Length: 96
Image (cartoon, rainbow, N blue to C red; front, top):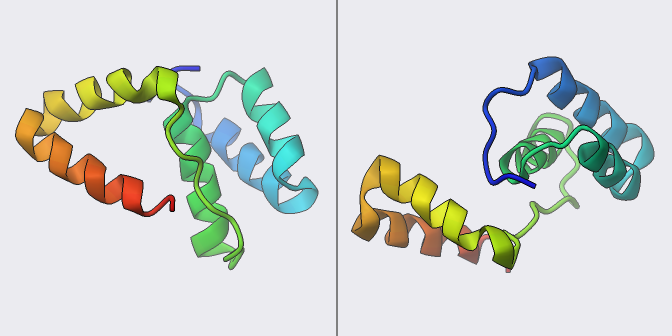
């Protein structure tokens, strides 16, 4: 799984949202694996289901250990290393 992949078509994300709402997390994860959705895409879908459709019981997936460096590289390229560390510390607190 990639950390981020902005090349996926939006209809794949919408279909993922529909699968999550209709069939639950296990079917959604299977769909995400089959469509090779990135870590960020998976969490976007979960956040959309939670916020737009009132599924307050859903929680975003914590970053897998094998993607931590990719995540740091991605944020550092945008914000610089010091600010990236601060932002990621805040993000990680939301998964507790």
